[in-house]
Image (cartoon, rainbow, N blue to C red; front, top):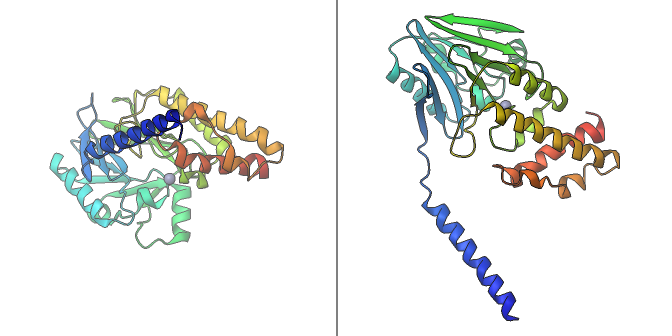
Length: 297
Ligand SMILES: [Zn+2]
């Protein structure tokens, strides 16, 4: 073997070993965490595994969101316990962000605690048909917008139209300038399997509406990358630009007859290769845009 090649291989091996060593030294995060959002005195994030929810504590009760109990009922028991640690007030509301089970399954402990469950009307329609044994049906539904006032806290619920799913409510705390938006605005990450229930053209409109709203901090439904961070308006703009870039790239190939293969196998978007989930998730994005531009769906 030529000396140069051997040196290169040696260097690659060293880099791989260093990578493994660095990874091994990363402490794995605890299974769950409850954190207060900086700059607020009553807005919390409950994270369990790779899902998270917002809850708001007021003098007249607690407003909780997404029970995140899919396949793990103990997560919901923990969630309720964590709320009780920071507030002796009753849990008055449980708001579903959208109808996907990984975010809303397991709500029975909230129902048992007396919470009124609120969701978009389309979520209720779907859940009524699906009859998932682990997912509690909403008590109240809405379309358009609704404002919940509890104690001195105001929470605005808004349906922005189709984006990720057809039942997403964004939740805004106008005083705290916090927005809770789940799954249609990944923070610092390429969206993945959720693209199976995604409306590409309408999602762009939703993101523009989000950019026009008054808020500073975005709580995503999955911890933002890197390090579980919250999102900013720049993150929303970046995600919108990513989708537009993916859409334009696939459109050109699709109209040349390249969907599904070879687009799914060969198309790359190197501008985003440093985003979390790039290698694993890009094929799901390409498939969704192939469906749009290659099949019209
Ligand atoms: Zn979802």
